[in-house]
Image (cartoon, rainbow, N blue to C red; front, side, top):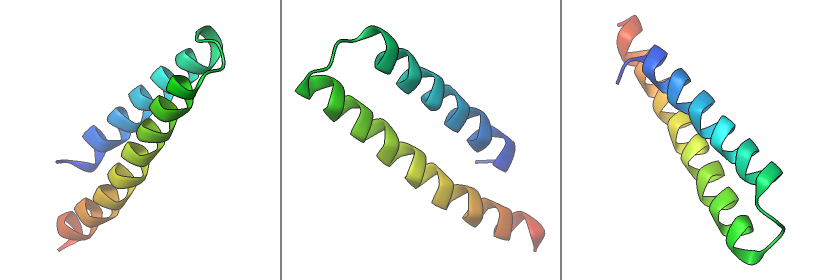
Length: 57
């Protein structure tokens, strides 16, 4: 994946997480979904740095 694509995916996931935080009442399900989305952001962040290293070679 290109670094630019990863940035857009992270922004999309952050927007979804924000919307869930605003409109879904506090519940264990909301916490689980937010945790999964945060994990995706972390994985994409690692992928971003790997993609940057590969594109600079």
